[in-house]
Length: 429
Image (tube, rainbow, N blue to C red; front, side, top):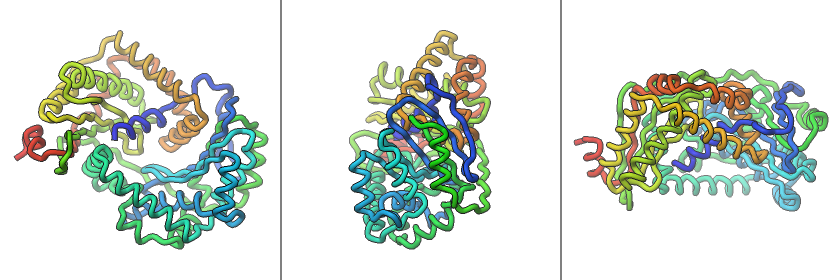
């Protein structure tokens, strides 16, 4: 879970510093486009589909992820699956599809020299996927195997427990991956129907492109490829970010070499004025947890805290330990200290420097650029991605403390491991 949260934390909050040209937005045939020209030799393209888990019922959990994956692996009306795959391999073209909690994407990554070939395959996967039954069955089996692996992996399972407890009664109660039992009922016809009658709609889609291509060439390609996108009504789901008001716990007994625990706390949305200050506070809290739990007491190998940006955002305090009681006490102590005390001006300067360096590092690839801009658009406005560094620079220690107190009224704990040690750690009978 820690690694997944770190990846989301970095990729969702990467900001376009040091790039060669300004980001622009425009509309082509009713399709919104966000374009970042660069001098990089790779071009990355993402077609985003809004909605995520709000697009389907609990009985359909996993349908959208399976649909987008199958769209990119089952061939198109123009290219049979084998031909599609061979062309992609020949030119080093990477085309993929998946769905997350808040959105789905169909992706293209390739070198600039073979962008025409890549665009040709990618646009066909969006416009005319065939969902070949044999290829569909293979893709479904692959995802079902991934679900089994997630359940077996302690960090992934801990994340599932924490999200299930924290967001019961919300759309996040539905897993984007779904469950094996649910996926086994889906057919090639059901995903085909879902894609063509539900997802393929320019009012729920937008395009993000970063790389070595001119706006004129890009607009021409979009006009040629996407002039006939369906135009249907779409009303986005409106989330309510209710704050936790108390502590709750979920645990699961499992025989493991160590015990895994995490606590989820509320966080501000990316478009909230509180967000920059809260981001820095979680960075500071992570450092304190690592210093106390790992360096001073040697209770856990790599404890800390991360921020996960979603429509229902949250921060996670995490650790694994053979001594969960002492570990939990130390994490809770640092959590309370952070709520009660402001960080020093010197630490704030270091935090800002560290956060900005991390952002700049992620901008070395076109992939991180399109993911950053697209996710910012999902969470309110793509400009949030590019404006954040200036906002980070203006954060004060008082704002950090106020933001943290505002969003930390309660906490949702999850535990995986020895049940008796859990009872001792959390004072449960």
